[in-house]
Length: 174
Image (cartoon, rainbow, N blue to C red; front, side, top):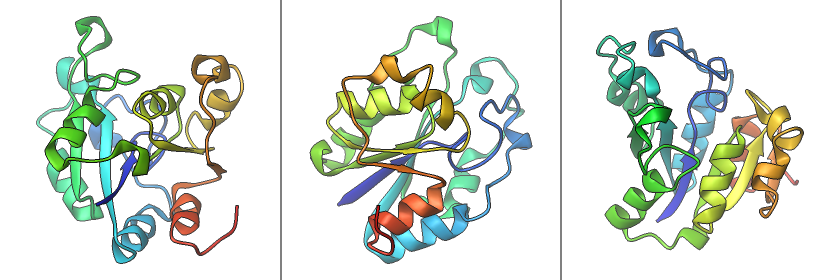
């Protein structure tokens, strides 16, 4: 399985800080990115922190419907708030560990695509290949937050998720 773990808020769409999941909107090219990945034998999986659930701001939002409709092979959601100190909230690795166990993945063959330092740090700790997108908080991850994941280097810095998908599928050169 060629797993690609994709962050939601700031990477796939929405503002980098979606307080209510109903306010989310996909960036241009997001649906095409999932389609391209699926068509080229990748298994795009979403891994996302959604503290709105713990804060009672999700109003029963159907993440599963959203993720199925976009073409995700699976999804891993941390429903906790920062204060809960869980193992699944990025930058901790619990979401990726769940996927590794479920699918018996070799994480060195997997990719993480995200816009935040916490996405990069979680993926780096698990040995994944890292792709940072400049949407959302990508600029901060490359700038003021770079020291938080300084021991890891991205294999690609892309403008968008779609550009990252095209690179993974061999349609563009870095």
